[in-house]
Amino acid sequence: MKTIITILVSASLVFSFYTNYKTIDDIEVKTEITEKLEDNDLYTLREVYTIQDYLGYDFSNIDLKKLKGIEKKLRLANQVYKKDEYESEQYLRLKSEAYQMIRAEGYDVPLHSLYDAAEVLRGDISKYEYKLLLYLSTRSTKTKVESEMLFDSVIADFIISKYGISANELFLQSSFNGMQLALYNVNDMKIERNNLDTVIDKTDKHSIEKEHQRIWNRIVEIIPKKYLELVDRFEIITDGKEEITGFVETANNRWSLSVDPKDTIDGNGNFTPYSMKTIIHESAHIISLNKSQMTSDNNGSLYVVREGTLKKDSYLNVFFHRFWESLANSNEESDGYDNMSEYYNKHKSEFVSKYASRDPSEDFAESFAYFVLRPKPTGSLLKDKKVLFFYEYPEFVEIRDHVRDVIKNKK
Ligand SMILES: [Zn+2]
Image (cartoon, rainbow, N blue to C red):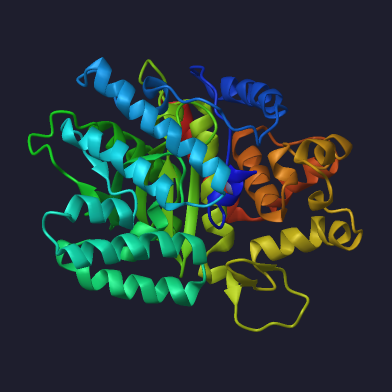
């Protein structure tokens, strides 16, 4: 369950798989295969990362002995994290040490945590400031109380803001148990490297920014401008092939979109079909959970999500009342089951995928992805009705037509 908990807010955890596709019909076939893959336990964490598998970069320039050292630290960090259930000092230290070893070889790796920032700035700040940052770093990962974290950020910012780094950003960073490869700020739908990236190699010889740009370009093609304009942070992450393909996070209507290039682009340089589905799924979260969908009044009948109270005529509120309300009252929510598989197996006609059975928000996003990528359903099962729901909105049909055009015209 750890992976789910670690990823904040509307994070989406999705499996990916590798196959090329040429036409839109192929996508539909491949999605069927994906469903079968999803029958595996979604919560199974991979035990061992090998450095080549784990990291998205080609680290062939690092000699094998050093690579093994980095791999060992990352693996240890992963073990500590699983044991402690939170980001302990030992975890932060091991991760920072691994990142620093990678940086020492000339690769750009974003700052992983406030702890990591303290280590990187060690030579530039006083001993007292260094110790204070380490203290704040570990404290913040334990408390998770918003007011305390805010207070900690303000203090940390006194020390690190002159280096162009923000503590808030760093607190957000450490919550992902994979590895951050690059961070970009998004302005006017254009990406620019974020200052959490410690650009050590000025010649940029290892840069794979072109690949990141390609992924971003695809996102720009798929996600409507109206929603993409809410995204101001683009993160390149990896947990190796499979497991997490991408997720979105939000706070104060500011959205962050994270993508794993290992699951997005295959060995031949083509976009994986699953990456398309993930981008569409994530865009559904932005569509349904952005501020324009929320209201400040609370009359009790509106569906409340972590992001706020949904407006009466908001997409997700309508979806919830039509498809989930009876379920919510029936005392048989998926939470009551030990795992999602058990619940899904009993309710297969109601959900387009197992992941959809997780909660109304994920059901909305999964059904939306099926709406975009699949032919119009002809059946009358509940899962068909959920897909047909999106045909009631001309703006969604427009998105569907557009995305399908993009897919047809690209390899
Ligand atoms: Zn999701």
